[in-house]
Image 1 (tube, helix red, strand yellow):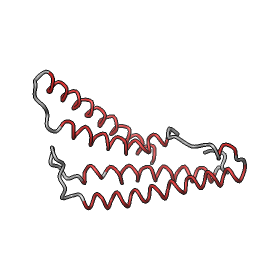
Image 2 (tube, helix red, strand yellow; image 1 turned 180 degrees about the vertical axis):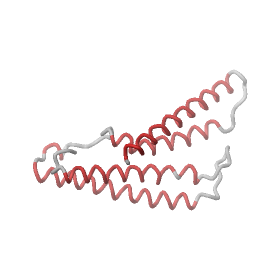
Image 3 (spheres, rainbow, N blue to C red; image 1 turned 90 degrees about the vertical axis):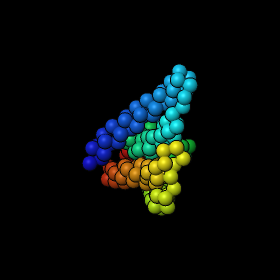
Image 4 (cartoon, rainbow, N blue to C red; image 1 turned 90 degrees about the horizontal axis):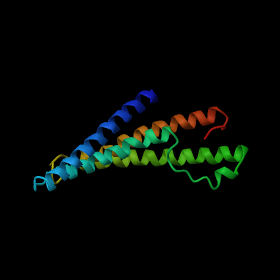
Length: 155
């Protein structure tokens, strides 16, 4: 199931990055070649960037690409290392849960607020927070389960 979600997220990220590139390039061309400005391109690129970042969280996590502070855990062995890693997973899971709940609250509060240039509900922009954090939470739960069932041999 996570394989399919990862593939879909990758494709969405590719599309959002492509649109960001296109609209940013179009803005530069319009501004310098046509001496005119696209009113929505900067705002749209910014919102696509937000979606790219939040949907990229679980994709990067799946590949072990997030930064990790290993000052303590790299010096621990055996049960202490397992407890430390499990605690790190637990803190991350709690944080993602808070982000999902608070992100959903923000989405619900911003349906009436419109973006300045495109005049779309800001809820569509803020929806990236609970969506990305939900997929990240799923990834963390799967990793924690794998870590605990494999005897703590993998981090």
